[in-house]
Length: 197
Length: 302
Image 1 (cartoon, each protein chain N blue to C red):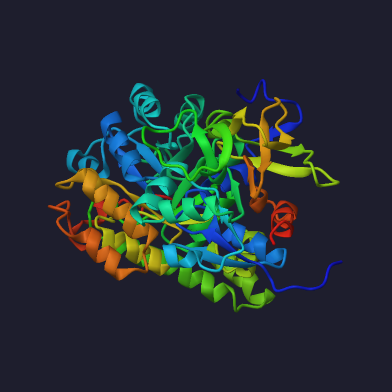
Image 2 (spheres, rainbow over the protein chains, first blue to last red):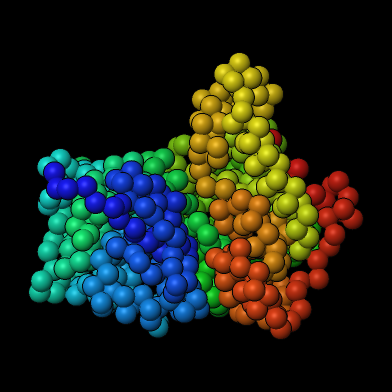
C-alpha cells in the first residue's frame, strides 16, 4: 500500500447514456464522480469517463454544448480517459462506418467499427480474460463495437471470442467495447482509477 | 452473426443484455418515423433511436380502423438508412407480430396500445424472445406486471397522438409517486401493496429497495415541445419518446434538434428557452379531456 491520498475526482461525461452506472462504479472504487456537461466542469479533474450510450447522439451534443474542442484539448494535454462502448467509439481516431461527419474526440490510434457484432438480437455476455486482472471479467456487449486497426503503441488487453480486440490501452487512455458498469464488478474502473496520478 | 452461430462461450437474450440496451438510451429522445428520410432527420438531430411505423399516432387516430405492425419492407428501409437502434410496434398480445419483428432484426419491440390490441386478456410472454421489449404503463402495478412478463424497459403511456402532455404528466407522476410510497413500507405492507397492484412480491420488493423501477423508465404520449420533453425529465423520466410531435410540426428537423438538446439539458432553462425560439408551428393536437372514452389509447392494456 502506498500512502493514502485524496480521492480522485473523475468526470463522467453526462450528455447522454449510462452515466449513473459509471458514477456508481467509480464510487465503488473510492473515486468521486463529477458529472461533466459544460466546459467549466472539466476543471480540476484527475480523469474522465466517456460512458455507454449512442455515439452519434453524444457526438452531436458535444458539438452543440461547445465541449468537443475543450475536451479534445484536455485529452491532448494528457487527461486520462476511460470509454466503454460508445465511449470507445468517441475516443477512437477513426470510425469505420460512422455517420457522415460524426465527430469524435480521438486519441486512440485505432479504427473502430460500430455495431460490429450485429443488431441488438446479437448482443451477448461472455467471460473474457483481461490483461492486468487475475480473474476473467464478465463482459456485456450491447450493439458493441470492435477494433479493426491497431496503431503502434496500442496495447490489447482483451479480445472477443472471434479474436477482435475489445479492450485496449494507449498511454492514459483505456477503452472497452463492453460494459463493466452494468455488472457490479468495478475492477476495470479500479484499473483506470489506480492509473491516475 | 445470429443465435445459431455465436461462439459457444457466449449467451444472448439475457435480462442484462435486454435491460442494458435501454440503459444506453437514457437521457435521449426516441422518435417516431414513417420513412427513411424521416429516420435520417431523426439520426442527424441526435435521436438515440427511432420507432419505425406506417402511421404516426395522430394519423392512426384520424384514420380509424385497425392499426397493425408495419410492413417489414418499410422497416427494412429504415434499418438500411440509419445506424442508431430501430424499434417497431407489435399489437398488444400479438406474439407472432413480435416473432416477425425479431426475425427481421429490429432492436426493440414496443408492445403498444397505439396499435389495435390483438388479445384483450393477455400480453405477449416477452421472456421467450431474444429481442427486448418496451411496454406502456399508466401506473406502477401495470409497469411491474409488464416487467414480470419480461419487458426490459417501461414507458409511461400518456395519450398518444394528441400533442397534449397532461396524460403523460399524470402517468409519470403516478408511477414515481407509487414507487416513493413503496420505499417507506415495511415487509407486511409490501405484501399488501403487491396484492393490490396484482404484481409479484419480489419485483415489488426490488423496486422498493432500489427506489426506482428495475428497468429504464421513459415517458411517451403527447410530448410535442422542448419544454414538454424537459418537464418529463425534471419529473424523473430517464428519457422521452416523441411520436407525432416532431413530424406533424412545421419544421421537423429543427424541432427534433431542439427536443434532443432540451432533454439533455433539462435543468437549464436558458438553453431550453434558446432552443424553443422560432420553431414554427407545433402539432395542432387535441386536448385529451375532449376525447371520448372509446378514443382513449391509454386504457388499452391489462
